[in-house]
Amino acid sequence: MVPTGQFQLLCPTFPEAPTSIGIAGGLMEVASGLPNVSAGQFSLSQTLFNRDVLLASSSASDVRRRAAEQTIGNKISVVAEVSKAFYAVLVTQEEIELIDEDIVRLERSLKDAYDQYKGGVADKTDYKRATILLNNAKAEKRESEEFLKARYAFLKEQMGYPPNAELRLAYNSGQMERDALLDTTQRFIMKTGLSFSRWKRKNGCKKTILTIMSGVFSPR
Image 1 (cartoon, rainbow, N blue to C red):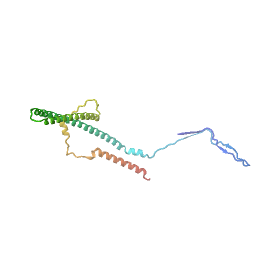
Image 2 (image 1 turned 60 degrees about the horizontal axis):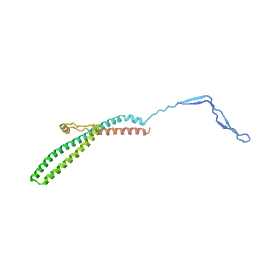
Image 3 (image 1 turned 30 degrees about the horizontal axis):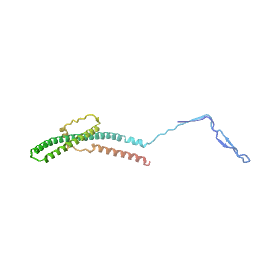
């Protein structure tokens, strides 16, 4: 509503008629209208068609499906990253255990080579070779221990675990071996996959947009 009011008469000015001898007159004020008059103006508008509203209502289910797919995809990514970090820690631990076994064997070999060298049975070459192999194994163990610290830190980061808190891994090797076996008799159903669902949803959104835009620009 736009209120308007007129409480005094409007007095526009007009030029006076020239005199009989051709001299132009001055300006004359002439009152017009009615005094003490007020009026109100009302306006109302309504949108008969809104392309954005129609698009939003038509694609609402696709948007909700997209949010659900995004949640599922995030869960899959978290599980995949944590699993890779977990198995990286296990592999490094197994490597360290194997290196420990090699160190025990090399120490025994070094002792035998030293005894043979002292007894005059063998020369110094075998003793030096055994020493070099033992030092290499110890250096490899130190390197693997540093890798293990870094992989533990990465695993904590992926899990959202406190960095300074102690983390102990518990697992069943036998169960892990059984879980690693693939069931070759199980059929793969593509329609249940997340990638196929995303493709189907994107295709539906494109069809909805195409239908709405074609309706907007089509002649009536």
